[in-house]
Length: 88
Image (cartoon, rainbow, N blue to C red; front, side, top):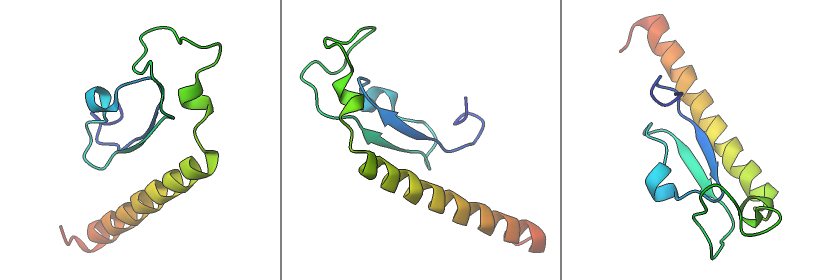
């Protein structure tokens, strides 16, 4: 819903197939979950906990989310300046 509304999203893919379910907004970004031989899963995991999500490096995710947020903030700042001076 966010992408349809024009809002870029950041997605963390675990068991899903990112090629099939990648966000539709062109400014959206994503990170892949840890590799798993059973990926993509449907409604249940083959393991007691979803390694594809639990084994993602937190620092790598944090770095990518921060980079995404900085880009979005810079874009919003440019839009505000353009609106203020009507430079569209």
